Length: 127
Image (cartoon, rainbow, N blue to C red; front, side):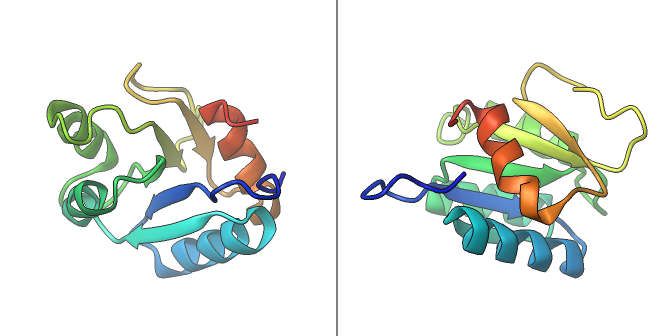
């Protein structure tokens, strides 16, 4: 699912501490779906990037050193400047269930990079 012709490409903040996952996902989302991508490597960087760029959505790894994804979501929701940005969690957890109502959904790792953008659009209701 690509962006419609003439539509402003959605800006996603992609947060993952694994360079390979972040790079592959960012490349696929840009090339296949036409998203604009900003990346962060940890929770604190994600908070800063979210305030600075005001993305249309955040795709956030759950298991990161320091501040994990769930704490990052809690802090995003507590800040009026970022409280309304929708978030999808990326997780290697086996059940992959939504751990909190503060997120739009969960995408399990490993994921198909070529189908990632369509799944993001579906979970955010951008389809």
